[in-house]
Image 1 (cartoon, rainbow, N blue to C red):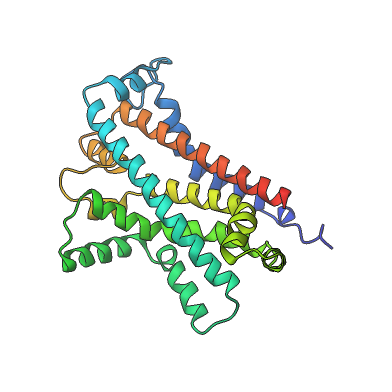
Image 2 (cartoon, helix red, strand yellow):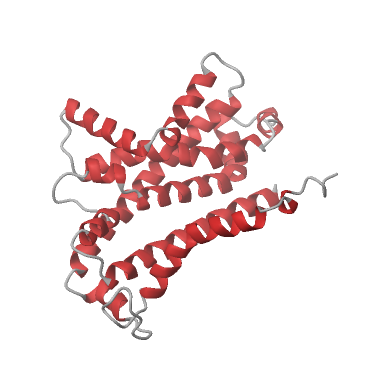
Length: 269
């Protein structure tokens, strides 16, 4: 029966799958390959070279990219950390509190930044900051990223927490542990893989975000995505391909780490 329902046996499934993979990943492969092009042309291959990676770190625009990278990394670290703490507290309340009035609405509110178009979130955030008189800059980017990253951190944490039986907490309290001690010594170590996965996911989302950042960054503050966008408006150059490839590589590494951390936690459980 399972063999009969295998979707891989449906006519055209393989062709559609290959087409989707090509559309999704061919542009990324082209950018990565041409970042090693010795020629200044973005279409003609001139041999293998690390020239444009050297240009990213030591070229005329290196200082601009370094400042943008510093802003991106520091904002992503702080936004990811804050969002993870809030998401952990939200997951404990949603999963461990049982049924309560407004639980469905609370979950919908948590999921809203994922479901709403990012451009709508960006415009709404900009309008809100304007209404309260908040100066746009580093702080406005950080606040918007924290809010936007909460649901991304919440999902792996809540999924991990749902797999941990409440009997662990009850057994610890039966052995005279306080609620804080039960959380610190029992629940938190079991929840750690989900927390790490949630933080890494929130970090990646913040690091790669462009639309919200571009709306709320103000003048004189750039992150890597906005710096790349500003450089592209002047023409696509090979050093932009090199910088984009570096960001892609970092994202792949972090996603891989998040996957294996979650998998290791599931196996240990």
